[in-house]
Length: 461
Ligand SMILES: [Cu+2]
Image (cartoon, rainbow, N blue to C red):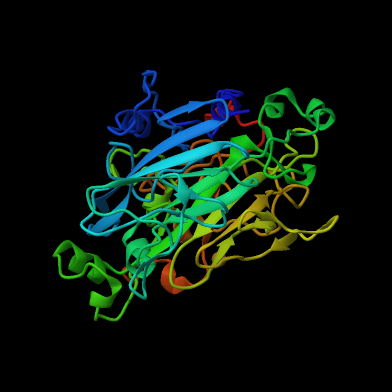
């Protein structure tokens, strides 16, 4: 089963193999020798994971082209930052790199073209048996000095990595050359490997028809079943703009050149800092930061909405990030593409904060429950709402404390609430990293949108 057949299972599937900019980009790759079938570009899904189309693929094979190049991203405070990252084929600069979505067992090739002024590479963390131009990929040395953790490529050149897609899970790829500089500069991306295993047909048969088409497994066991309608990636990164300015000016090309004290000032989720994190995928004002970072769920219901969401965390930075999704714990089921099992014992655990260590990935199932019976106008919360003149209403407030209800807003409130939905904060609990150059709230900060159940008036099916 391929990513594209999976995503065609439902019209609101979130993991749609992207068309649009990324696909056109990949199709244009000069080093792609096989013909590709042009397709009409559709916009990417507005939220959720945007898988990059392979430059070409056939049964059991997925070929990608990445171009390491320079570019600029925008910060919410108006700054722009010089970056290095991986573009898809001839596509626009983008940060982070394209999301690659093979299926377990696929033969994957990644051709890396180097348009940077320095040697670079792509290292696929946790994946064994990687070959580079047909021979084993190996660390590279200049004399006795380690130059790269994997086979690398000079400026202007290209190199092709190949491997069998490993066990299912969430993986990271990044530069193996001077990672202290190059990964920080932006040479990083995610790879999501889907299992061949399918959800138990008896369980699927018991799901509401509107949900059944979205049932997926994250790993090769039924305890990892989730709804692909609610699958999200959160890649946590950081950067020091002084370092990036020095690179832009040509003053620094290796970490050894950076005499300044490393001091990250910006903290990104999927390449964006809050509030840009909650903007849709492909937002026009963020042309080089295509990935949004807002999760979107509906309340758990044993009958109508039993499947959890899946959040895939990836972190690259100077320290562990304690990411905290407000409102409910998340159930950590895997780390670094490995299911948390001890023999038959399932070691999954509910976590208040999802600690994502540098260079690691964490997969977590997320269920939002409407507790307290739930609170509705018929079962009111036992605290009277404040008078309107004592309220500061955020743009996203519905005017009512009840999920699915919309009340009157103060006339000066610019109401952006669609259908009485809730928005919960989700952020790095190291609050110094939930900032944009020190200004709270920003950086590693996003929202979780909770729609009322059966929310046809929320723009959902
Ligand atoms: Cu918090």
